[in-house]
Length: 448
Image (cartoon, rainbow, N blue to C red):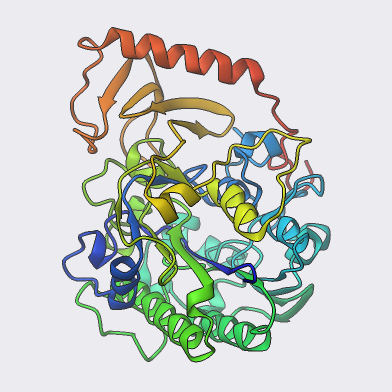
């Protein structure tokens, strides 16, 4: 049997509560719901960071972004004037799978460096079609001056016009459109994915489909615009769902569905600062930018018909685990010259055995804010974002929550379980003693 085809569908700023299968009452996502019914819905699945750039670096390298230098206390993400990107010394999932003769494509938002030396083709991908950074960037200076700044532009949905966001669309290393037509960009990403599947149906392929929505500004095509009860945000999510349905249907038509693993998840929690233009964390606390659960726990679905055991999985997993899992499925040995933060999920996917991940490290920039160990999570530092959830506070003693009992992190139980805090502190001590941080790739911008 040939190695399976592998597809990651990565939404941008989609919250834990934004799919109907994860509890949203008015956003309709029938295709993702069917994926969850036929496959596995993971309810304790996490990203490596609560903002775009470091989260994407974590997924593609299987490493905490502090190790690759893709996290920073100065600039939390890369910008159009950033000087650097993902170092060539990092091994991406695409490069790893090339060792098993996979054909690879990155479709959608990259955000790991816009200069040519950092683009997908230089990191193991055979094909690239997408935008190099977030869709809210490249706002004309005249508009910023007229409106009074970034927040004044993006908070007003009346400014959701293509010409107000001069983001380029790239094909491979070449700019083919500026500004990118965001009205139909979700649909075009889906169509590029379908073409790649059809073209490469006779050999194993890996597709990293990274939608740049529902990150603001919000855009939807005529097919879905105005259709959702949830308004424009719902239109955007339902268009992504429609694309998922087309991908699954194409896999079936090409006879590839039973040899293709599809993973759907999000890069971080919802951007709550944008009110109804942003999504929902459901019962989880806070959202994007923060190390509360709503910032880093994301809706996740695995689909692999007749291969994985359907059901709900409440054990801990991470996007970083896809590196080890996909390597195992492709028959590629793991690199032995670096520390990975990736665990093999195949025992859970195929045999319903107990997972091996017990620990999660919640970084904000290069600082460790919180640690999960089994059911318990300790916050050593808490901090809000975008004017929400308060200032930076060193928590001494740490806050402690049992996430299985209290996923909303409402009831601090530190006084009841001092022994748990001591156990987590020992985990932190070992982790930090072994941590070798990479050189900060995000801090340098413009003329700095």
